[in-house]
Image (cartoon, rainbow, N blue to C red; front, side, top):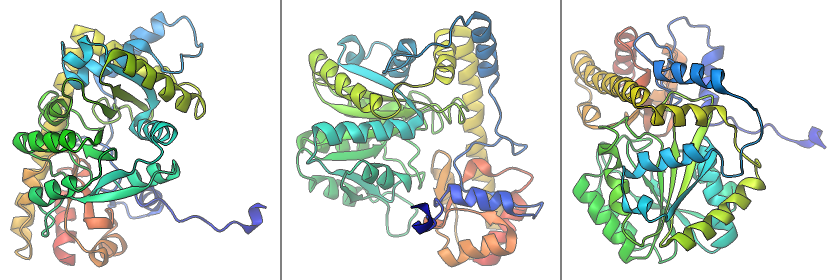
Length: 397
């Protein structure tokens, strides 16, 4: 049977990583996959994570299965991080969580949950959105549509077009919103714009599905949650997919959560029961180690403080590389103004490079970026590779 199979095309992002690994050029630069790099170009293990692991290993008594919804302490701390201590959604008991294998796992569980219980709903994604969003939803037999987002220049948010698009979405459909650090553009709504988005979502009776993969990588832990908390209003319903890959550096541990916010406690428990069926029929229950690390760090005041310091350093380095990139490109070429990149937030930016230019960067200079929009991972830039990177970009412009 397998002899008749054709080779599937490589993933648009992870396929580039494979090509990068096979590239013999010692000066190659990978700005494709969304992984944080420090000033030396490595993906570090946070000190607070190492300390939490040491404590867990000393105390661990069993490797037994977790429940279907995962580690209870992890879910509680994940919700507190999303909404803030004392938030009405927490105190009322109308927010519940299932632990998932990363943020992508949370998206798939959400999609399966929607397929089971709201089969006629469509999922609306921003144009552009993360390339894997439509694939995850379509794999769960969800119909995917798009709403306007980026402006014609590809450097800012066309908010009026976005608002108009949201106004046209039928009641009962699902609208996917990027909580912060929009992937792939790095362009986020302002707090006032978030308020208007929330108004439209609730007036139109849409179900918001918030992908919140980068909390703390934009402006700060609470500052990045402004949009999410604006959407979470009393007696409203929301799905939140969160990840700890970036802000804890736990990429290989695959730590995420699907949080369901219902209108009331009973409705939340009913929704949780159906989400657990989606988990049980997929991967049965989640792994413990990564979630236990997160729970330990967030529960320990000293480790929590250390984590916030380390997270702030990562955020600061990304923002400083944005500014350095803009400065270097200004020195090297007048063909294009890249100042917009310094205004964006998070790991990613649209460079505006064409597919031909992206291909030339790879073939001539061993610089790997995503073809669609020329998405660059700013966190992959370092003081060591910035000059070569900017020379290569200036050459292909």
